[in-house]
Image (cartoon, rainbow, N blue to C red; front, side, top):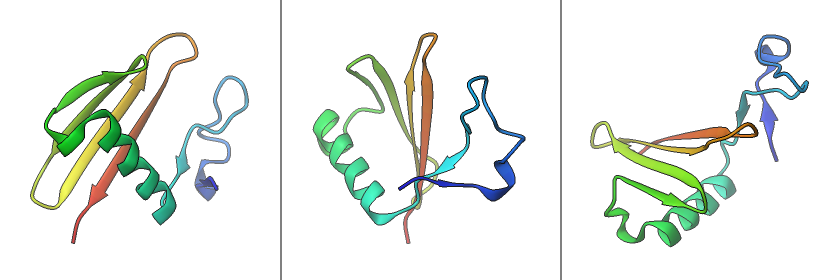
Length: 87
């Protein structure tokens, strides 16, 4: 389920009337996301790769923070940035 940020109602509406800022912060999302990463980049050995036309990059900013960015170029393109903090 997608949850919209309450303060994003008018500020982040895209050209087609779709809200551009969403949160996917749930355990099921992160579990599915980890499965997707493992299928495309086993053992997370690559820092950047491409899968089905989507450019992916993984960055470790400290021992506890990881950022994965996925970008689909083109007119109907999109970018997904997932920030994970480990405790």
